Length: 283
Image (tube, rainbow, N blue to C red; front, side, top):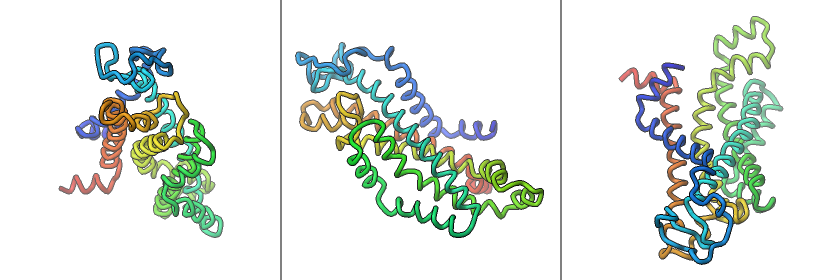
């Protein structure tokens, strides 16, 4: 692990991504203390509506007169919560399915993989929109829609890695020593493929945040006056280009957090993938 962290620290892009993620996470945690108007994020102040950035409202105000800077901080909480919970649920569903289907062969394995293929046959964003539209706008339904559409990606990844790993010598040795199938899968195969799961999870966080913002933009996310970034951009459309700050700063926040996870995921892939490590050392 020390070698992994050392190699990761040498990658400036990965460190930049990690720094961006830490800034957003800390901003979400410390939102009540960092916000300049923490009590006004869901209130109307018609006298100062659509005010440009100024000394009192650093990033301007929205159509309700609420401080955009404060709404972005509290919106970070919603965005991070949706992404983390949705990815966690997808991993908890997809990894066991892929592990079982990859280790065992036969009809059961085929049924599990064909089930994941059904979800993968429909574009992920289209399926998420359909589920969110059916269930109605709320944070819980967004999480459910994202989890239901993301788990097949982890299932297919773990399935392929398990099929490749179960013929390795250390797995055959564990089986020869009398280890049960569950012990082989959990204690021998799963740690060996964990690097691929970590990389896929890190990169998937960025895509999840972007998809959640898309659902919010389409009105399928948390209902108003919840300070969700995608909905804020949707509300700003009728005031463009005059009130440019209304859409610019929420869009910049989405860009920063998605880029942070993508940069960190690329760095982790280079560090944790043995094939890439061998290729780089061969040069």
